[in-house]
Length: 128
Image (cartoon, rainbow, N blue to C red; front, side):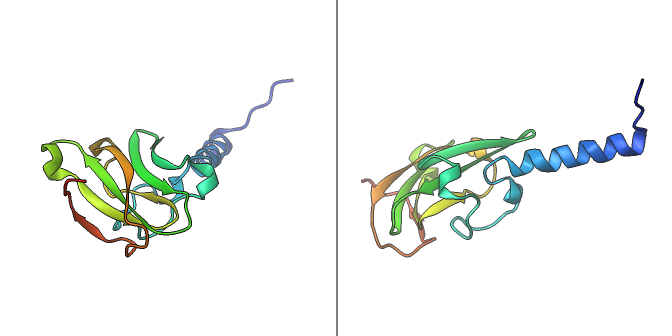
């Protein structure tokens, strides 16, 4: 026996599969949203590794930082192009946060200290 689903049912199944695929990717629920760094959590700490992370949703790439500690800390964010002139320091609170804009623009992010800094505070790169 051959089963025919019809074009409307096949399209509905494809759409629901796409939604399920988005839910399975860390931060996908916020993909494409533009906001200041640290403005909201994009994933639970358990779903992404601690520290710098990247993920892809379809052809779009994203990057962020997951702070697994209990206090705010300062991280150095390496941005592509311009040497250290484009880099900056960011105070992050516990949990995963996406960086704004395109993921390929971010090369790395790493802890540099500053426990207790004001969450979301961004400053220019200084030697550390």
